Length: 268
Ligand code: ARG
Image 1 (cartoon, rainbow, N blue to C red):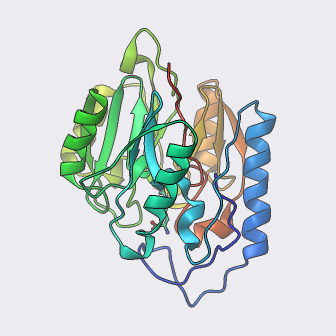
Image 2 (cartoon, protein in one colour):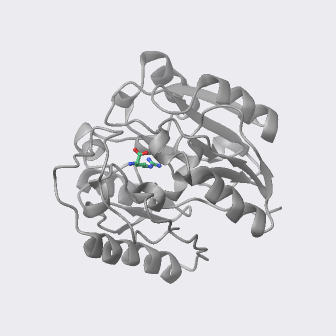
């Protein structure tokens, strides 16, 4: 995670960002702190990267890379405003014992790549390119399923899919259920998702619109926005424990709970 010390909205690279609207950095910091402390209370370890002045989006660490088995595949940002974040994240990975892989293709890390069981779900349409999906396959040697996003409000895969069971079990992908927002995807991708995840939670457009899918799960506790009330009920019905954390200030930058969280999967 990265403390939003320099958080503000000074440019527009997604439809949520309106530089004319005032932001409150102190509020962003206190909301972020609640998320941080929630992870600790749930028994997770949290590592921090130092924020860099002039990089207000660095708080959205999910975009800093994609990490499996101690290998960190770096990000290559679509927009120049975020470009300098990439080397900062790479330096962090390298100095914390991860093997780093320099990316050739444009990709925004775990914002667009989600590990579901032993399969990588990979988003394209707005940020990460199709080519990055091929690169991802070569780097990790895993199956990569490409999904196309079509609604500009849901420009990263983690705004439209939440992996509910992130732990790889013996059954592989079949055991990893997801929640998703069908309307964020083109028809082909909707078919792929319906076939692969017949038991998935299909979130309502209302819950999607408040960034409800942008959540993080440890397989039991699912940290979600308090505004996603329908999703909260769906999770309870399935036996998950929704934990509500409000990041309304960070939503002004077009990010939420998952965006502020990059999973560090160490060596097996
Ligand atoms: N302002 C950031 C951008 O547009 C928000 C990133 C949100 N991150 C995410 N993983 N969805 O790039």
